[in-house]
Image 1 (spheres, one colour):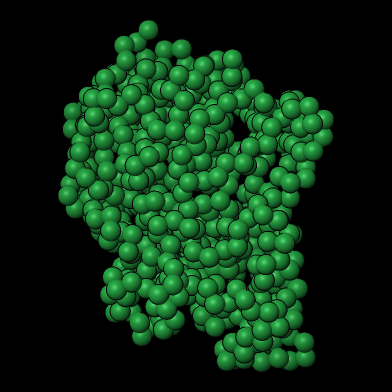
Image 2 (spheres, one colour):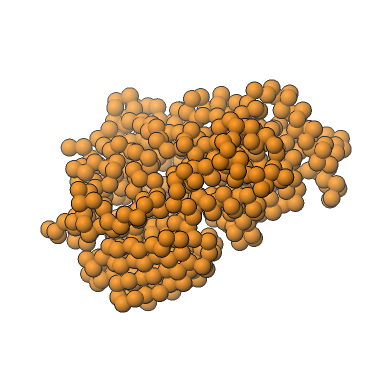
Length: 575
């Protein structure tokens, strides 16, 4: 039995304070069951296929369970916004302006083959991601100089605007073994289970059929306080299915133990039967303690047609979100703020501090932005006729005349047509009401459905007018905002689906990421919320404030806290 790592050996990083080590009384993360029983097998399923076990390469998708086989430099806290604790890193030094970070690795950390984890491994991981990874990661790492100091120290120097965001991104990436990848080409896909360092190792991988991971008996951090109450199963089996119907039937039959449900109709209707009636299966709805997540359609501003805010607002008005509330019952809430009902949401008239931030840009913003958090505060009560009349007026003003039943784009002389691109057929089916209503204002909406790989490629290539986007309300804000709404991500290779490039947006995001003052960050988030809502960059569909699980009655779980519960990480079999 390895000796427990003492709290005094655990480093801590937070953008809001200068504390470097945890308190000596720290014994485990919040929102775990620290004395949860360990053992048994967890069986779950997925319909998201994989094509590689190389997490450093794009394009390519690794099985989700692969991430449990690697450790990271940092682990986020569940109870302290913006706080991280060191796992592979035993010391963390971050400059006051967030432009440099120095990590000293834990000398107890080693790979599953017993070799030590070194600074060379960390440098290799990020140099490889910089060359072959996701576009967002390549862009981020393009501004970072990586240096090693001895065998255990890694130093990152960031040349962009200082922010804690890049530190958290790097801190949570799975570190790879440089020695293992010497035998393989890290720019290519592979289905060989890679060398890991985490609580599990992959023991079986059958292409898009099954993945099995098993507990590592001599895992170096088994007794680390950050892992107490986590990783409670001896084995996790993930079966892959062609569609949700087959996966749900496998759960009802008893071949699976737990599924996370995403679809409201399935949640309400598709699990009924003997397993639920007899109590073998249980439906658990967990009310989230953060701002939840907002499901939207995002406009691609790279298309000249959609640069005009009047066109975007007209299209958004054609969707009556009340229809979704009636369809889904009480499982969703009507959309409003991008931050839900959290402290970051803009409500009513802007406070003086918000007005001061927005003042330099008001010539380019509607006056209503200072009086209401968003147009939803004044549009909610409009009748269908009023919504369509306003949409028609806006399209008239934008210069798209009717020719017969359809509006014409004067620049092309062709029918005004929008294309929605997705890799998820259920999302396309949910847009039938929008499609019908747009037809009534002379706009054609084409629904273009693709397989996952093709759809993802089209979306990353920005070959769409509209696509699906779910935004989680992270607190502190900044990371998601940077990824989707900063001008650095607006180019052809950028991760920003909307292609938004606006100085007000950039300024507010940079405050969120660069300030150490929580009040300033909250104010910037509220002003940003107003900016996004009044810019009509998305069509908000609904707000999700619950997470849904259907699972075997013998499974237990802790208080979920601020974050989603990952059954593989925190659940356990009740004994």
